[in-house]
Length: 328
Figure (cartoon, rainbow, N blue to C red):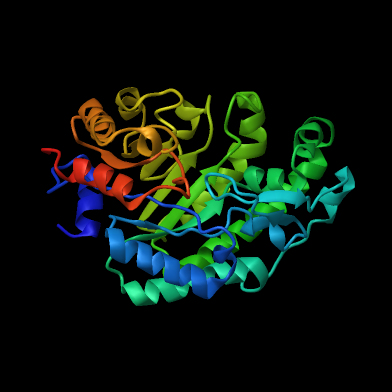
């Protein structure tokens, strides 16, 4: 089987020649340069030959063109930190205007993606990373978002509509540049941040508008639920083929998740725990345990989120080999 056949079969729960595997990591500061990002993406896929390539732009690319400033301060996962919000006052939400997604930070991401897609020639599915509008809004306004969500909802809705429209145009441009689908990340669908009704109002309606715009235009889309206490059952209803969450840190576990979500589960590895600090035997055990939970079907072995930047080739190799040697 090639990567495409393996993923398509796994999504449907059919027999595969081996368990699909994918992992991804950030390249702090280097990922701000599209040529360097392209080089890193190509080198990563050439080294590991994963079953899909999750494109890895900076996690703050979506707010820079609206004035937010971010820096990398050594976070273990390679993430950048917003040090100057793009939205400082409540009325700033109303000033948010549309962007040209082929210019600025947005434009750089798809420039890098286009070069990567051309070099790979369709050998492996490529998923561009996009963020839910509410996630982007939080990065724009940081913690101010929560007060404005409850005290100035119309101002926030204005901004969310603008962000949604820009995200859709960016995604459609990414498809033109060679993306086969999207890694759609929400960092806000957690009961630690809000009630389900609030996410329905400020999250789901905009998430689904984006996913609807992509229907029929992509091969695979993956939803990523970031954090703990996630709203799994609600978002498992989204029209996506793959679902990734921190299954080693929060409910549901893979076995229960497989009864809720009908597509391909993506996870099984605790990237900041066992993968980094465990022995070879412990890493192998964790991978096998994940596959045992799902009987080796409808699961792609992957981290719950981005790998730590300190991860070693040996650790990645151990996890990958354990998945490939599993008897499906």
